[in-house]
View 1: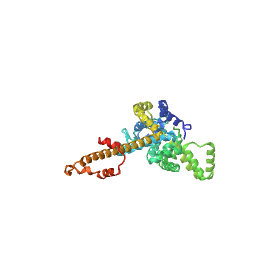
View 2: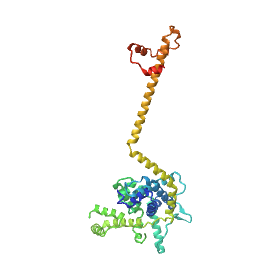
View 3: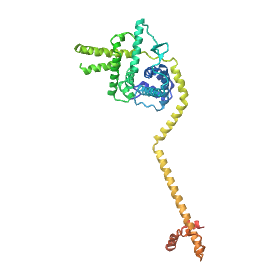
View 4: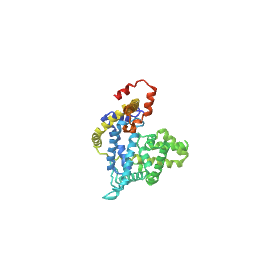
Length: 203
Length: 174
């Protein structure tokens, strides 16, 4: 894997030489996918931002020993996954608050709110919100490896081989994890999959 | 298209939209296997769900916050870089530490050997001197210690074989 085929690896090599502008470019490019991944793994949007900052600080601190042995995104998401696992282990040892914390005003809605950027009619908006909640809950309920595989599958720049490297398993095992995860999601989201709700314009 | 190819198309759908050619092949397969259509639609629906997940909001000053944290870490990172650069230079000259270690060991061994020889000769010379003094005394009771006979055999052989003059020994006696 050379830096010629991976522009992000080339940027990271510049960071290794002390180029802050290159580092800023990488942060801008990957902050959204990193936060999305972390938020859906630890189920806390506020904590996700802090963890994402730690990820990029870790990237900067590790820059001096960075070697181009894989795509930059593979290396980055390996760091992301490890930090998420550490956070989950820390929470299991020191459970301070419930991961299913609900909004005090309405117990049926989660504390975390998504910004509603689309103009839907009221019934569609309710259905859309319910659907998104269900998807989020279904993803969060998956075993860690299946969830990681499915979330990384949504990243266009991360190939199946890269996902396998992040998970530390073979390509066939990775596809099996994705397949099993999707089967579980299909079972849990069955009512919604058949309503055609997914056909409405969303993202 | 067979079943394996059908699954392959489903896997492709996990990552990206199908090309027109792939779609037409898929439709042709459904025409022959209508039961596969339901499975394909569910797969498509799930992929759409996952693609429609909204982005988690990111603070507008996220990058600036990261750069601030990085500024705090920079002195430590610079130090770590210097240490690593020095280590790399040192180990790129892999023969250097080995030769230095070998020289050190050789020096210590040589020093130890020289010290042992010097100590032995001094002790031997002292014994010869003491024995010489004892030899001119007719009364054995004047000999205060048995230790001067420690090297008696060696001294006796010296007298018999008449070796070449040991200048160092003579110097030690003086």
